[in-house]
Image (tube, rainbow, N blue to C red; front, side, top):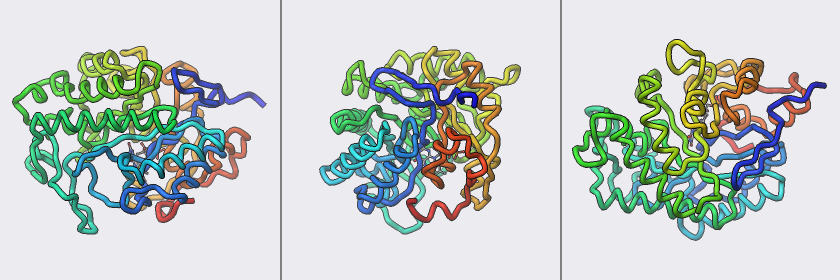
Length: 366
Ligand SMILES: Cc1cc2nc3c(=O)[nH]c(=O)nc-3n(C[C@H](O)[C@H](O)[C@H](O)COP(=O)(O)O)c2cc1C
């Protein structure tokens, strides 16, 4: 049997991966009071035992009072939560895997349906949840400085606990992305501005602080998306030149790997080329990239939240792009949420055993 090229190892700084498949970060809300328990450790270590190359944790929030809108989302601060994460990484290592936490601040959020609210109002660049809808307060420069320090502290803790990398969540309309987008960043100080390059400043300072805390030899991943949860067709960078002005400074600030979030990895980023977001990010920065979005499935994840099921689909187009050198790693979300053995099944060519994804899989940690 021909060796699947996704099963080549990958080495970069602190990462030594056995293959190119990454478990995409997926919020599960199974960590009461922000503390991941043994069920969470079992969930991740099963994916490590199932041969996932790199596991990215669900978003885990940094030490700001209003960094989360859900009490069951794990914290990445405080002794109890960090003890929980210590169990997670040691179980994942015992099972032969590598892992990084996805460190997260949600920014201005919708109130959680449970009615739970953090002890202080949500915070963001301009207090806006979306253009013309305020649901939080505008961060002062001292709030911004404290938040940057909290990202750095979380990254330092990731390294201290023995994680292999850290991913900064800069995508999907959460805090960092709220700074990127002119729909939610109306600031007139140095953190605002007319261009994406100007609104990049907060992210640059977060990356610089994370890099300062973890040192040069620890791999730092930044997840970005062009789309917004308010508009899935939106593009922050409308041209390759705007993308250059956005990504090159982030690469200089210390990003090792860009994790380029799309709903469908095969969608071209700009007219005139079939390169996707990860393809452009790699071409522009020369850094390693991760692609993601409906790999191995025939339906995208936002439709899945509306209850649509997805069936397994071929990896041929992914492999065509991978062989062309468009990206280094491929992140898989829903298939791995539903089936800890998904990677093993691909490796062993057990395609008839692949399950697809239905919304019921969200109800428990399997
Ligand atoms: C249940 C669920 C939770 C998610 N939570 C996060 C998250 O915490 N952080 C994040 O960056 N993306 C999150 N995502 C997006 C996934 O990381 C991924 O980009 C998306 O599911 C597309 O990959 P897929 O088509 O392989 O599922 C989530 C997706 C799902 C289905």
